[in-house]
Image 1: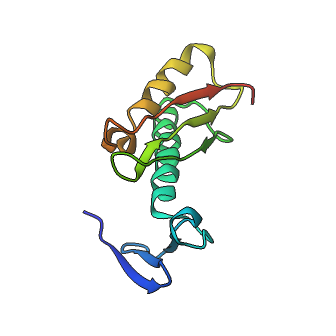
Image 2: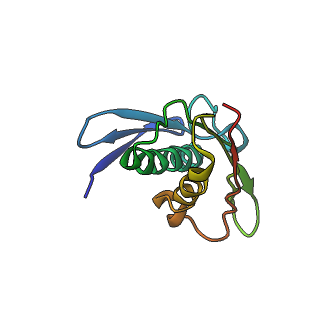
Length: 136
């Protein structure tokens, strides 16, 4: 179990503290929902968490198999839905892979990406579209 603490700091901002490390992150409500949009919103963190989880899960598999993975990257876009309530509607993720990943190994990494714990924890109504680019 990992404990995290959140304190409401006012002006639609929260300060999040990771218990084990003490590292902190601030959130702000997005501009389209009364905030200033000066840092990650809570829903932005879900998208960023998904992208980080995808890369981390792939890196674990690559490390276990001795396949270099440095330089991999991910870009995620968050699309909100308004109905039936305000929620995350879609999180398209573009994963940029190093050219050095062997052709025969790519499917294994892509399957690992689809099995990341954050993706598996999202509600089925949140569309997660994954694409992979091996151009370096």
